[in-house]
Structure formats: structure tokens, C-alpha cells
Amino acid sequence: MSADVIQAETINVRVQDGDLIPAYLARPMGDGPYAGVVVIHHMPGYDASTKEIARTFAVHGYTALCPNLHHREAPGGAPAEASQAVRDAGGVPDARCVADVGAAAAYLRDLPTSNGKVGVIGYCSGGRQAYLVACSLPFDAAVDCYGGGVVATPDQLTDRTPVAPIDLTSDLSCPLLGLFGEQDRRPSPDDVAATAAELTRLDKTFEFHSYPEAGHAFFSVDRPMYRVEAALDGWQRIWDFFGRYLGA
Image (cartoon, rainbow, N blue to C red; front, side, top):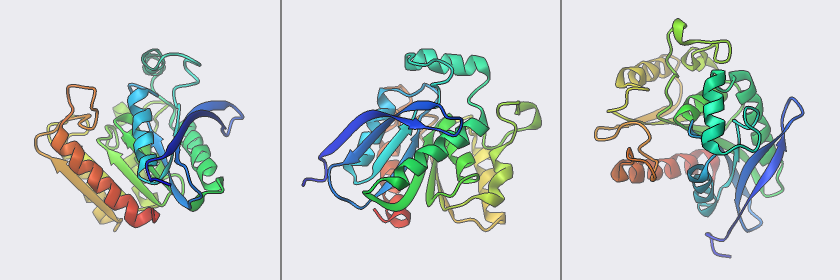
């Protein structure tokens, strides 16, 4: 069967608090075994561009699952409506994010086509959340795409986001790839350097790459910040990285 024959659909995943939340599942049509990837959407929400990312992973031989982390604030709402509701509430609570992503990872591992390995990738706010969950749950590989807020000062912490993920780095469970734009302000080049220094100090396995001509959201093909050369190179680094650590 051709590698680009895939199936994609919206399913419901039961999470720790007993709720069912929507999640977008994209998978190759075959017996596998396939590695899994939890895709954490950006702050614009559980939207069409994020679902396209999940399908891209499926075309490349991964089973991808993107849980809707904004579902509680606006059940059934459009992505823009739900993301605004999340902003108004103060963001997705870290504890709930970890539980939801953990449920998504467990779903992937339990599939009969799974090879037993699961990675996580996130973009924008999802990049911070990818770092957070990789320090809170057992993953085999993690990718942070320009996650703002990994480095945070005490005044930036809230009841919903009570910790700077950089302070959890000692618990990082897996190799980490970070992709950043040097023109970004969140995370800034100084934030990226501080994170790299902490990962080095703790002898963690990581690879960071920053693109001089890119800012935030350079992977987003439908937004003005898209930078084709950075995005193409970034995708190749993702395939190489996940290929090494997930065995796809």
C-alpha cells in the first residue's frame, strides 16, 4: 500500500477527569507498526492548519493524534471562539494539559498498530506545553517549535500556569529538538540561550536550531509569518529527529 494512503477522522478521547474531548486522528492505512506523535495545537486553536500537520505526519508513517485542549472553554465552538475563551480564562491549566496529553499518548500506545514509541510536538503555546509534558510524562522524543513561556519570571506565573517549564528540566524524559526564529520575541534569543544552557548543565540530550530570517510561527503556511526556507529545513530536522528516536 502506498505510504501516502491515510485515514483521518475526529474521535473522542476519555481523559483523566472522565470527560470526553475531541481529538483529530490521522494514521497510515496499513498494519504498521507505526510510532505515535501527539500534536499540540497552537494558541489560534484546534484548527484546519493543525489538522493538516497531523495528516502530514500520517503521510510520513506516523499515527498522529491532536487533542482539542480548548474544548472545555468552548465545547463545539469555532477555533477562534475557543482560543479567545481560553485567553479570557488565563490559558489552558498546566495540570489539565498534562492529563489530556497523557491520555492522548496512552491512546496511541494502545493501538494495535503501535510500535510502542510516542513523541510529542507543539507549536507556539503548544511548544511550551510540549516542553512541559516532556518533563512530566514518559515520552520517547519531544519537539518544541518556538514555544513562548518556557522561561518565565515569577510575575508571569498564574494559578493556571504556576511553573516555568525550564524549572522542570531535570525531569525531562526524552531527547528534545527545539526550532526557533531569531526575530521572535517570545521566545526571545535570550530565552532560547537560557534554555539551552540549562539543558547543557543538566546533561540532557537536545538539539536547538534558530533561523536568522524567521520570527514566530514560521511553520504557519496560512499566516504572514510563514518562512518557506526555515519551514522546509525545520520539517527535515523533525523527520530526522523522530526517525532516530521513534524508529519510524
